[in-house]
Amino acid sequence: MTRTLALITGASSGIGAAYARLLAADSDFVLVARRADRLQDLAEELRKAGAAVEVLPADLATREGITLVAERQSAGDVRLLISNAGVGGYAPLIDIDAARIDDLLTLNAAAHVQLIRAVLPGMLAAGEGTIVTVASLLALSAGQSDPRIPRRTMYAAAKAATVAFTRTLGHELADTGIRTQVVLPGPVATEFDQGAGQTVPVAMTAEDVARASLTGLRLGETICVPGLEDQSALLDALLGAESAVLSGGRRSELASRYR
Image 1 (cartoon, helix red, strand yellow):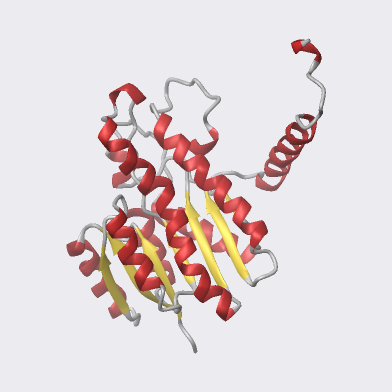
Image 2 (image 1 turned 60 degrees about the horizontal axis):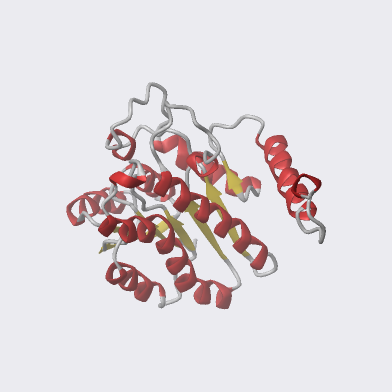
């Protein structure tokens, strides 16, 4: 059997590591994260399960890290990209150091775009491939003022960009044999959420998030919300609302309230 080569970012723990463990029976890996020691530990575990593993330490908050991973992808052999790396940066905008804004946007948004752009030529040449981006339910939270939701201006903006990017990319690639999916988990029991300084009384496991995503791919889902029971109806309603605003806003005349 031919094994799929999967490149997973943010693979050293949490959701990224969970994807790797679930895929190990059928996939080989390029594992990307900042922490080389943890990548090596996971690599040894996956090798014992029969997978071939490359370890590629890189900080995707930096242009140098993105370039390193993009160059690896230029070999054209990656058929599954799981672009999962991210960081919270939960804080009011005024409390975020101005020098850190570029790092947060790079890791949480721009890295997805750059890595996907780098992997596409190989997938297009092969006529197949799968691209998964991991966003967040907070991408849909801009209108919410619930005080239990973390301060998230930067994070929500970057994740909303990832959702829009992945959905639009799916239309571009519709006839190419390349599948796309964006995953919107809620609170997850990982170091990511624990490090946010938030009390998360109910959180999904990282394994369940990864399992939902992989099952969703088999079901043909381009958007995966792991905890959402009535996903099809609610996402259809969201699409309908988007279409109504888009078509209604195209009119050449001002709305009556502005006259």
